[in-house]
Length: 404
Image (cartoon, rainbow, N blue to C red; front, side):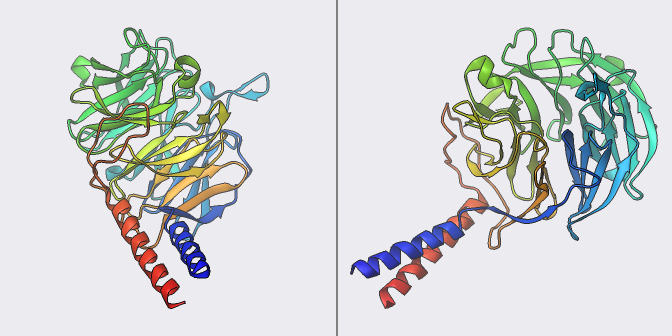
């Protein structure tokens, strides 16, 4: 009996281990032309991964099908202060793909935007924002072909509005009460642009601010305060949901560690993801139905614990992948396959694929939670599939044990 029980437990442990992860590492691309110490944002388009690399003054181009680096786009500005790379005056920085134009905009350290032709992976235009410091992060409305870009190192910080058809700047919006600016995002539900503000007048924990980008009335329309956050990366998911990644200053300033999901139509926090902080780039995949947070400055009990967190739309943490606190503040997901890519300095560009047998569709509804990780009252497709897969393996394990 003891022998049979041991066999059952062993097989159950094997079954649980085999079903534990949504994503598995499938390839690591070596750094070329050299290992970077400073990277910024990334993007995936038509099976090709792009990553800004300030150290090497260019953008890595990686084929996800062949799992090799196929190019490197140079021509960016790196600014030094006393011989040290200074992000505020260095590029490349933020990236946004304009899929309906086959273009990619990349911010540079001198305040310009490099326009890259995605057929040739070459720079075809240079747009001035009027700033001498970096053009940082982007968002795009494909219907109006309008791009917004943050110049967060200016005083006061600015958002510049770009006409993508003419490659010209049409104006800017000033944020006089803001400590800086982080990620802008376009909400396809209400067709509005929003931007994350680490701290501003009336919102010491930070805010998400909605902008009017019409040339005749450039302005801040609405301010949605965020509690104890200092928001950095934001991205829109379904039904007016915006995922908010809080910066590393959250713990030091507020003694709190969390990310949030907000409904921008009401300003209500509908999920609190406890224990995930220090994020920069975040993204959402309609293929998988998950949010992805590059929590590279995450801490646990004041100990650096960098992770890539995969989070359901109800706030449930699905998986955490150990990364680093140097280059892993970028994350991208292939919109067609769900393939996940994150750069890690000591290893390279790491490619993760969705595990075999996992269905990548999430229909979870958002739920409100407090300081603990949000509990799931709705279930996402991948989670259901993994549970069913686990249950099947358990049944098989018990059957084998009985036979033995």
